[in-house]
Image 1 (cartoon, rainbow, N blue to C red):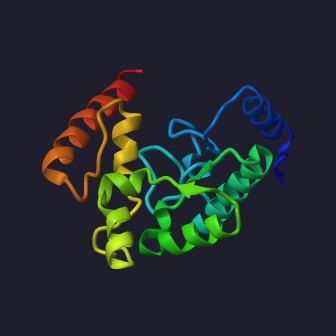
Image 2: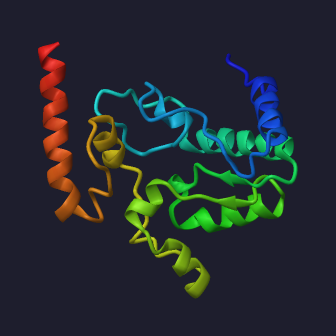
Length: 179
């Protein structure tokens, strides 16, 4: 079984801090990699991407751990916590716990901000996120990105993003069939 070795990322973080970097955000992968759950867990996979055997909470735990390793190595330099979207309306609680424990200094929202751009305001003003506005981690925004289109939430803003999703996905499928 694969075991995470933090020595290289820790060395890189310390070198970056020494050179004056004032803010860090980390990731465990990228959306073009065959296993995107390494960087963001999902309920539904992108086209052609296998669904992992691990539970999404395992992916989240790995991301939270990586962020804590980076924050510890970075010292006073703030590190952005990431990987929270799958948690939906429970996101603020995990974020608060990680910030309070010093595992990150603040939290960034990726896919969640496509689906629910007012989430931070709702947390601050209403004390919670509306579960009916949260990202459902369907991977359609990721699919648009993988297909080289301008991305957004296909579910929550379907008037704008469904046509983009269909266009770029059809082009990607056509390219795949030609190769």
